[in-house]
Image (cartoon, rainbow, N blue to C red; front, side, top):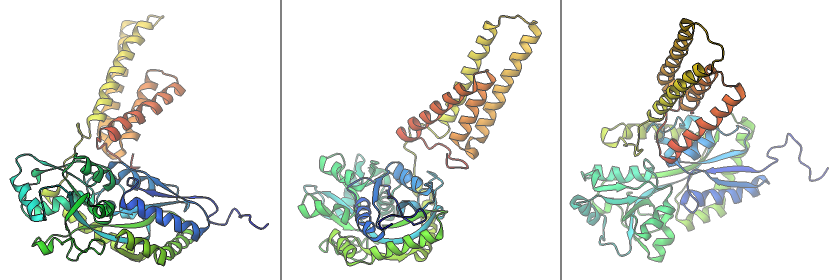
Length: 427
């Protein structure tokens, strides 16, 4: 029948494109342009989903753990080469099947149009002389823009404590915070700040490159200002591992057709993004080389990122162990008080001791295995075991576990930024 799609024809339903960064930023803009053109190429809707949070952890993890059926793409960014080195998540370039690299952009330094600094050397001197840390942003802590900024300070022997990096998920909200006065400096790419730069609301003091950016030819490079430091980011599209190769090849061909089109080239030129297209194999080689390079950089003592979380990675596991101990103690007392049939004192005592020993053993196993097994897996097993030992009904115990464990994870890992152990499955 004309117009009908067969079940084995792929794709035959909408495709999701995961963007790890906020709406309005450079990565979001490129993602949406790709989505529009990919719809025409494949004949199905392509929906962009902004999965922000954790400095890129949320989006990259969502993409890597998506069902490998070819219906979920991820717009990967340079943070993919950094997150696992920083111990934030187990996702690495090997978690993905590379499809196509799209572009590379250099970092640049922006201030408000009324700022007192007219060159990167002015700002550098101001940081040296600062009596209080200067608020700076551009993205989340540990992102490429943060790394580029700190790398510049280290390269020039400027105290890193002279700047206080404010973690914000994306360049667009960072620039808005700059205009609002919440931060004094933003580090991001020129295309991401292009509209504000053209409008005269922000000023670019320098681009971290040895060549000027075509989108802002009047902006001097760091090299022109006698600072031998350069760094930037990249963007590319990837699939989770396990997608059938026939589908991956078809998607790769479609993406390369889009990336090589005049329409996409025109968009990138207008937006000021540096077009740098590579196929899946070349992109994979680039990812491996970049990953090793960032590993070498982040291994340096001065580049180790301090966690901004208010508590450490074992706070929640420890808290759960304490709660389990309290619950177990209350359970022992209530069990003893509610017994209608009195046993011999020795028998009662031996039962209580066995339960207490069981609690201690479970808690010890939890603390010992949490790092290896992962917070969610270990804490769910611990809580379920304790509840069953207290003779709570299986369905009720399972319900308590399903509500309590994920809730604690959301509060501490997402809201407070506690780096919980991820373990075998990234949980």
